Image 1 (cartoon, rainbow, N blue to C red):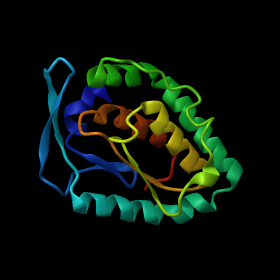
Image 2 (tube, rainbow, N blue to C red):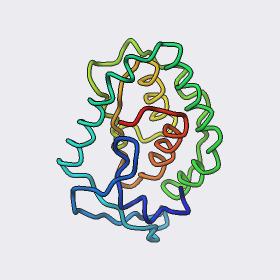
Image 3 (cartoon, rainbow, N blue to C red):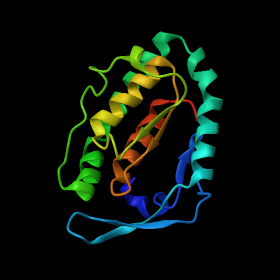
Image 4 (cartoon, rainbow, N blue to C red):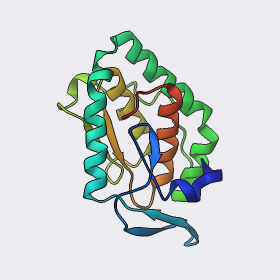
Length: 173
């Protein structure tokens, strides 16, 4: 992920692939020491609408998966995150200087407490990678799609999470 960071910062991951944004707003991505890491494109209302449409389209496929298959998918997501521990730590250092490890991210969260519809996970509220990974894993187990909107100053960890989800075999959308 970090080797093609400049490209990824100019795209959004929607419906299983990196796509050109619909919005044109840009933001500097600065390291904690103030140096420029790159420029990223900000999502606009049309980008959010496209992500929501993709999540809603994927919902029936994810919900139709047997519970055991969804649990296995969530477990594979955990394995993929563990395989990316160094990449996740590097991303966190670039964002906050504090490397964190994600381990069994979803163990303490309850799938029964999820509200109906696609989940919107805002990184500005839940920027900690273990919490974001936990909510995503619970959503998978519950057969629910999710939209991740990373904090403007911390998009790198979300990129690692998205790549781990895709590698685990999560349905597009």
